[in-house]
Image 1 (cartoon, one colour):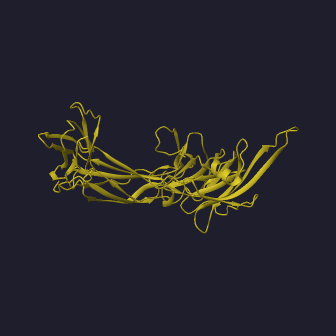
Image 2: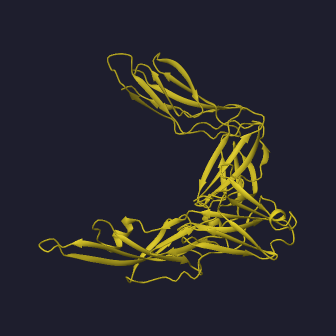
Image 3: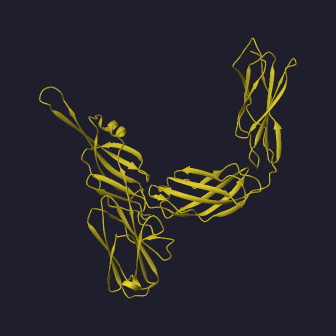
Length: 413
């Protein structure tokens, strides 16, 4: 879903109605921000009557702001049904400066996936029809509804008779519109959506046989903190402007300041409020921001914080679980390939930038070395299989070379 009437979207043509021009009241009292042609404004004493056309199944929310930055819902949203709607803004031309806007959102349809519907109904003849009635459960805050299922199957033979199979399920969805649970119940049951919206602005509404979910676009996260641990930042934050459980993803960005180091980005799923930014460069200042996302859209970035990493003082650990094996064996020649592998070493407090692999052969087989990047965990050597070989690996970061791993011994073929 997305807003189609945000005042700060450059792609949207905006009409701004100024109270001082139209209504003869002070400019600072009321400003209406709307999409072009989307609203009529009629003064009524100190009130404003805002009228607008709706379409189904869009969801319309009137919002207010004192600074065009932070917006709050003025009234519960209205489900579009193709009719003209009117909202009265009481004493809109009095008091402090206020801005108004409408946000129109395209909802998510609440359904039971066909595979789950088939598991309950037991039949699917050309598809299963669903009739959904849903609302927000006052006891647990979840989205709950009844889904009535039906499918018509031909009995075959002469006459072309058909049989309609029916069933119903009690279904719970999360705030991403995903099914959490479904349980068979009596066919024909209904649910009374007595709570169409919660205090966070999440809304469920029913139009005909279809149920829709609308979740607000979050405001910028607050309370962002970052603490260095080794070569990583442990970042935490607090979602804002939405029910925290409605957050589907959060994206954390660490952008280096006055440095050629790469920008680091991590996305965490669900309603998690912390994440890890890895492979930090030493003695580098990073500007950290967080963006939270619901099915309604993504928030603005949080207020940035700057954190400077420590100098590289901790060497990486010895790589663990070193192994080796033969491939492309050539028992009659000397073109056998030894492939060494290992697990990532603990990086210390700066990223591993390279590994040194050393193999030593018995009986005069010789010693060979190779370096690979810090993200590579294997190396190949073309050597004769005849002697026994000893393989070790060593990791390097900005503080220097760490200890050598335990040796892995590989015999001839």
